[in-house]
Amino acid sequence: MKLKILWPGKTRNREIRSLQEFYLRKINLLAPCELIQTKEAKGIPEKFANRIKEIEASGLEKNFKDDYIICLFDEGKE
View 1 (cartoon, one colour):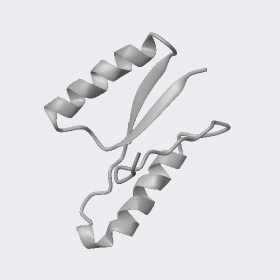
View 2 (cartoon, one colour):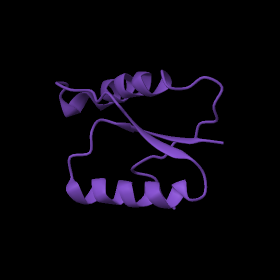
View 3 (tube, rainbow, N blue to C red):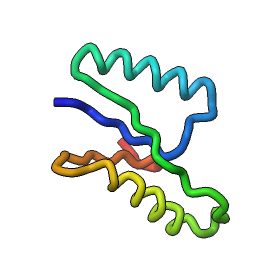
């Protein structure tokens, strides 16, 4: 089993990028894992948030074939 983490756009924040690298190293000890950065929707005002999500989702869908998909939502609750 190989884990693929898809991330829309590049991580510009140094602290978050450092956390990504830290956790990728930890996960790789348990199972092969890779971070795939997809295209980020650019040039669209924030008021069109649904359109932005559609564009980013289409970029994510291109990376799947017969895989299991687990989605994480940034506004989710535990």
